[in-house]
Length: 321
Image: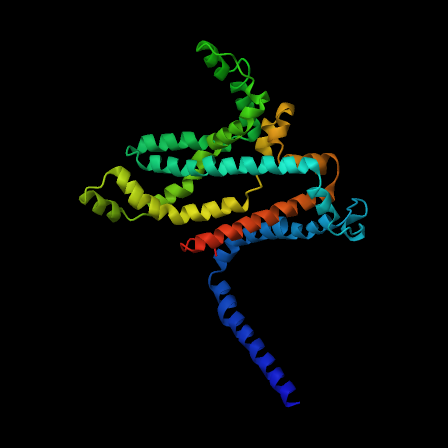
């Protein structure tokens, strides 16, 4: 009896503690800064409605989902969809294509905004700097449908690139129909479209660097190159680490728009990725359970990579958590 009374007292004390915490902490804070909480409310609602609630639909990866029966009436099949996925020959090829293109983008596309931001930082004439930045930002606002059309026109048999090749005495090449060029085209077009937009965060981080560090370096005789190597890059490292971890978490999520608009029947063997496969299997063929299993597979791989690289980044105190 005494033990039960003590347990009830402990529970009452804990409940009182959480009540006081809410009353004096959270509720008081909300009342004081209600306008700020009101501003972030649309973002919170967006993530709840479009990010968290749809997670409940992931259960169809473990069902033989039938659209007319719905989630609650469709039969459960356990891990059968994942077994089908891993034993499906085409998926191995799709996974390899996705991993290779993602690796190329990580090696070539990720550093591009860093290099461009450092170059922007060296432009001293403000009007030139703003003009060049605007020109590099512009492609970001074009859809991949437009960019895909531009790429096809440039690399067509009678396009500008082949016209220059003919002027130099070379034979024209059907770039968009050649497997050997597809992944290179994907990476280069991605850099052209997003490199300018990607510099915004890095330029903001560079702007936040204390100018006195550069002044001290000039007094010590450091050149602009040495200032970049020993001041700018080390102070950019936290920003680079965070963005790298965010990119690695989406390693297998290349995006549907770019690949779909550049893909041709002749380049399927090297360009068919998870997103385009999901489009065919899920939207066109109605294999909803299988494609949901693919989505979960992508998420698990992304989370595993994020966890591993975050553990490595924490050794230099640059992790996300």
